Image (cartoon, rainbow, N blue to C red; front, side, top):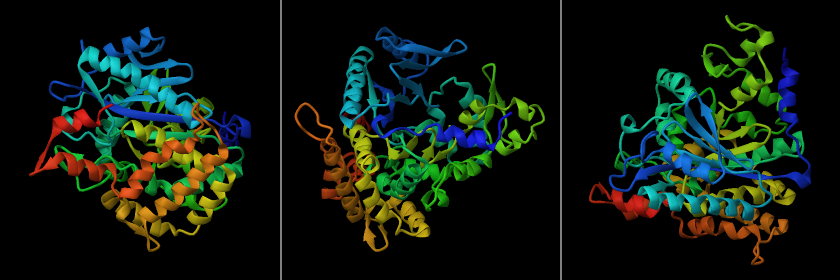
Length: 444
């Protein structure tokens, strides 16, 4: 039988030593057919299953659910599928941003070969710009089909669009103590809307401008209020493992997994389960794995596991995949930079932050907070990150620090033009979206 202290220990056991801190990067992309721009199905001659077999030939191992391959693993990295077939590489924990970029390059080298073999493309974008929800091929994964899809449908809102039509890039980081975790959660939660603006890359929906620079970000605000957003206590001093546990205990549980089957539990919080209130499961039958599964269904902009996930950016092209982990590494893995960022973020009021977040989704970094334009705040924070990366002094073969990977967002700030703004300018004219050009130029 597990108790609250066991749940707290789950997080505290994630504490790392300074010399073992690692960076993880996850990025999703849509796979489409070049001839008609439709998404490839799960099964068939040109399909996700066929592509999986090419990865298997490169040494990846299959993870199956029944007869279906739903994921691949190799050297602490994994490839998984989101509900609409979004193809996600979850990279191995690595020592530097340079190593992260090298891993990404190796992955994209293989996807380039697959593009030629199957006449397909891999599109990095925050929201699928064409087609409707009903046209999306669905992945036959039990958690999606049996639990999440009906639950999101019951909630109303845009949860199904989140599942089947959105994509993100994410960076993951370690913590060295409970206090260190608290500071990193504080800073990254407040900066998440800024990151959403910097990496805004989802201006279209169903062939038209969506009215948002980050429609993906907007979709998340209309998904599941119990487990999304930026909770106020994330931004407050004295953030602790116990506070996060108290938060997670009150959230409805999607399902318990037993013998490969998903048993719906959305009428129960995790607190209900460990108190023995479920009709079918006694409290003695609830395990720490159930807790870990539950934690993975919390979708806040910053998520605490045995590491910290940064979840506020739209999926994008190659440069974004290196820039996002670089941005966060410079702030979170240099003590001076972390304190400098905290001195700024701690001055921002939560209500103002929520207004800023809402405005950024629609207007990008033209939005203001505390009379500071988003672009000016971004310049301050990126400077802190760049200096942090230089102090880390992790150099590549050419003698460059990890700060070289910030060039992409420095150009965005200099030009005051997000990728969303650029795409509208380049691909939308006379009330028409140039689908073919967008897919060709924005794919990997």
